[in-house]
Every structure is written in C-alpha cells, then in structure tokens.
Image (cartoon, rainbow, N blue to C red; front, side, top):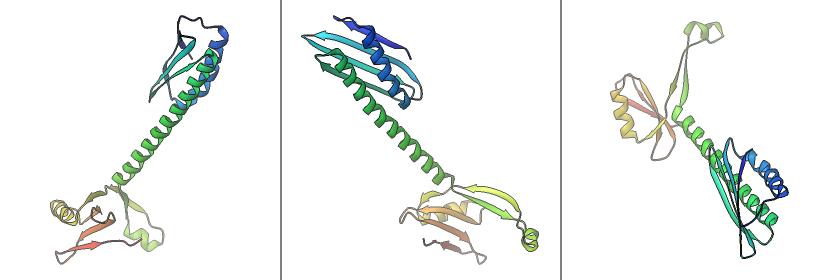
Length: 182
C-alpha cells in the first residue's frame, strides 16, 4: 500500500507514518482496489490539521480532523474514514443486491416442455427450455401484446395489484386470465 504524505509546517516522523499505514490496513478490507491514498498534515496555530483521502475502484472517502496532538488527529481521521468506507460498502452491496433482484424479476420464469412418451413411461424428459420475461403492465397492455405475438400465453406482473398473472388464448378465440393466489 503506497501512501502519499504531504506535510506543511510540520515534519512527519517514522512513527506517525507506521501508525498511519497500520491503521489504513484495516480500511483496505472495505475496498476492492485502492487506487490512491493521500495524507496531508498541516500545523496551524498549535493545531494539527489532517486531511486523509482514499480513492478506490468503487468509491472515494475523505476525512478532515483537527487536534493538538498529531497522532490523535491521524487516528480520528482514520476512524472517520473507516465509518465512511463501511457505509459506502454497505450501500454498494445493497445496490448490487437490488440490481440482482430486479434482474431476476426481469428474467422471469423458466418454462420446460416435456416429451409425451416420457410422461407415459414414468420419467419425464425435458425437450425444450426457455425463459419468460415478466414485465409490469396493465391487463389492456397485456391483451395488446398477446394479440401482436404468436404465443398462446403471456406472463406479466399486473401493475394495478403487483401480482403475477397469466393471459392465455382459449380454443374458442377468447382470452383467459389466471391470477394465482398466494
């Protein structure tokens, strides 16, 4: 881990550099890939001002602290960064989980077509497998989409009650609607 140190009106000892690198090693677990770490220390009117920023592949965090003791200021900055990194990582995970869940809803259901002879013999064999996208729409939109397609059924999420419905063509040229109850 390479840390860029910038000191203004103060000298950084090896002890403070080691402390910084030791504390930043704990933060590294929150990042997939750390691109840049910068520590700026400045002395202004008997206060040590520490600016610490970590730029990662997924997110960036930064903290600014002031303290009379330089080591305490560095520790406070690292603690603030750890809290920010933990929150950012949690947001990133939640966002990815939400994307995966939405993708699963968008992907829809898997439909298997069984061979007739395999059912009679007692062990069904899958002949064809396809995925059906489930999109939110009203019943009127579903009727129009089914009329435009060659399919005999349409699986969709009813936008009025947010339930999965199946619209199908009947043999008498009318349409049927299946609303499963859970």
